[in-house]
Length: 327
Length: 257
Image (cartoon, rainbow over all chains, first blue to last red):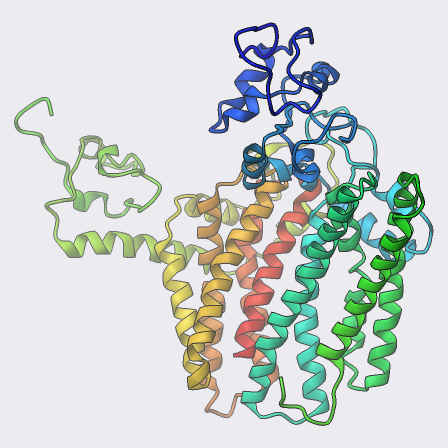
């Protein structure tokens, strides 16, 4: 499909670089069109020629709009992450369809066991060092992942495997340990214990999913709206996901039914977790903020979100007051 | 229909090899059975004229054969343990890893049998478990228990399968859901045993844990080997861990309810 040099069609209204002016070098349609034998015609039809030129030598295989999922809507090429793959569709429908397909997520699962191990250990041991997790463990987002087999770098970019499974494991552990600590504290009859379990599981699921996936998305949207090009959405979710690692041993320690110990342990875990996110997110935020007026409130908001999470976890699961059957 | 009189093969001959999902319908001729009935089976046969019992029993026999395969006793050789600790650089693919020496004969048979997937077995097993657990629950919670067990089993299987696919494994979705569903059967047995022993002298919490641990080992034996087969060796543990987590979660639900 010709999208330049063809004067019969009006300028492409969806193009964000100022209109479909002819004169751009035509992207190689023979390489790219066969890949899009899919029910979304927008993918094949609306290639941004600037991006296509940048990535013409990358071979015929690329995964459509993986970064577009993170980028959102119609972005100008200057604002876009320079490592975006060439197949980014700029239409909303194309992006919505991209979210439904597994291929867009595959690049965030392209990790080995050793990588996940390394990241989890780094989350526990190097959370206080500025930029360590981001620069030396995770690395920037890599659009060639899974495509370019010659990538020898150890830094594979943000992954979603860690956040997803750490969250699930933590949900189960929090629900189990909350019930266990309650049963150690009180002598419950069977029905009250049952009531606790289902509600603990549901509460744990709500809190943790909202915190690991919802809060970073909100922050990412804020940076988008404030035009701070700091971190991509997968990077946000990755850091928040790995910041949950300190809570895994903390939840086990919280089975001790003494309130004071539970709060201390949770506070330590929150400190570690908050530091991990702050140390890795604040530098890019401050660096991308020219006026130095938009980033500090955002950083403060990250701190506040962590504190609220800490209080909510403590109160809901591990604090045992006098009345124990109220749920 | 080339001739007026089509000679239909005897459907009862294909009863041993008849499967629900894998063969693709009666017109295939049942080429799964490589025995003396081969000639008759190569002709298309119609299952319309057979007795209803025969139709039902075909699927029942398929389900029972797969259940038997899943419940085979544990192998002595720690075959899949060796596979996960290896840090091999080469990516051999699913077919070649099936021929590795680390795959015992038993496992190969299990995998082969489970490749013809059907969803009746998992449905029956899941319903049995959900009904069993909802009987034990207090009356006003019974439907909640049933719903949570049912959803856990099916959504959990889906999540584990999607995870394996995302990690780069070319695994078939329904095949994997089928395997995971069949492997819940030891858990259902454990839940039944625990329930039967409750009114007797044997109802300690520790004994329940022992039963569930045995069921867990049994359940993860075939399913983790199956899932791990389709994924590169460097990330096999990443694909197998969700399987372990899934069965731990089911065991926790059984313990709870």
